[in-house]
Each structure stands twice: as structure tokens, then as C-alpha cells.
Length: 273
Ligand code: KMH
Ligand code: ZN
Image 1: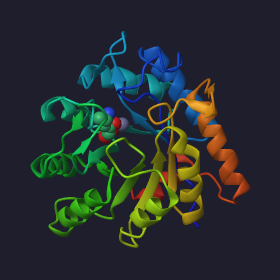
Image 2: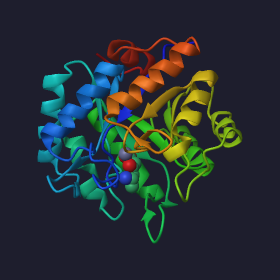
Image 3: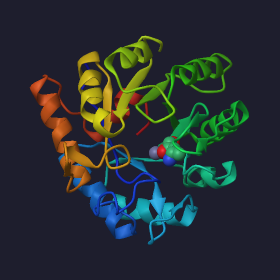
């Protein structure tokens, strides 16, 4: 089996200091959380940025400042900005971090409910537009799939030459509006992608550690972090993203999977150095 790629989703757009006081808002806090995850074993930082008061933003300038701070602390880590942003943002807002030519970015592959009245909108034309921008700029897309139909959308657009291969997926398990975070459903998702595709898995809330454990067993990769879950165990808030990554590393080691460095991650995902 390949070494294990660990992605840390350090901030997200929706989770707040009210949920966990360690959620990073400022550039300094984002740098601190990225460094804690990197030192614990993460080779990819999935990045959202905020204003200092916690408001989500896709501002190019804010991303540039956060990326510079992360680079200063973690020179070789792969930085993967979100093009999902927050529910309700326009496509133009969401695409701003691609102007910084990151090595990777997320490509959300469908529309879904996102709790309450929220809808995370990704029409087929949005996906085609975002994929085109990423191809033009040499950005490796990570196809975010919140349900099985989104895998089918990615495969259709790949077949038409719109999303370049080899495909790389993030199976997002347990969003309120997407597929549930159960072993049966994760196996269904994994069996639905081509054999030359790579995949990582994240689980929302209490699904985080069961879902990443199953991914490790299935030969997939893992994502943990405050964006998905703020607890290190039942009722105990995680002190940092690094603590969540360290738990993923412990599980992987118990199961015999070694951890990929950033250079090994670039090779596994076909990202040019
Ligand atoms: N914040 C969610 C609405 C991504 O990063 O591409 C979308 C999201 C997905 O987090
Ligand atoms: Zn995200």
C-alpha cells in the first residue's frame, strides 16, 4: 500500500471559536494551526481564510497573506485552498485563490443541502468553469464529493476531458444533506471510482475517526481537522489541529501504514515539483 497522505482542514468556513476556541481566524492563528498539523504529520493543508472577526472570505489578499505565513512556518507543505468558500458566495468570489496558482485546490462536484436552509450550490456549469480555470493554471483538483451522484458527475466530466486525470477524490462523509458517515456508504463510494484514481476520506463530527480508519484499511488517504470535527474524543475539545493529526498518525501506525512526506505526497498525486 502507498504511504498515507494526511490532509489537515485547519479552519473551514463555518465552525467558530464558540465551538472550539482554538479555531483560527487571524493570519497568525492560521499559521500556528497549520504548523501544528504539519509537525504532527500532515502533508497537505486544506485552507479557508477568515477576517479577524471570523467572517469567512475568499479574498485573494487574505489567502496570499495566509499562504505566506504557512510557507514561512512549513516550507514544503502542500497548500490546497478551498474554492468552495462558504454557502452563498458567488463563483467569482470563490475562485479568487486560484489566481495565486496554488499546487492544488478543491473542486466541489455537486449541489447539496448543508443544514437548515443552507444549500451549497455547484451547478454543472460552475464545475466546468472551475475545472477549466484549474487546468489553465496547472492546479491539481481534488474532487470533493458529498454523495455518490457527485462521483458520477466527476466521472462524466473526466470522460469529456474537462476534469483532468488521474482523478483524486475527497469523500466527504456525514454532511447533513450528503451521504451518511457509515462503513457501508464509504465502501459504496470507494467502489464507485476508477482503479487509477486516488482518494482521501473525511468524516463530519463523530464520523471523523471511524471513517478515516476505514479509509486507511481500504488503501485510501485521510483528512482530519477543525473544519470537520472539533473533538479529540467524546466531549473533549481538541487543543489544536496537530492533536487531531497526531491521533490519525497513531491509528495509521497501529494499522501498519507509514505517513507520506510532502515530497511523497506530490509523487503519489502526480503533482509536479
Ligand atoms: N464550506 C463549504 C460550504 C471546499 O472547501 O471546497 C464548502 C467546503 C468545500 O468547505
Ligand atoms: Zn473546505
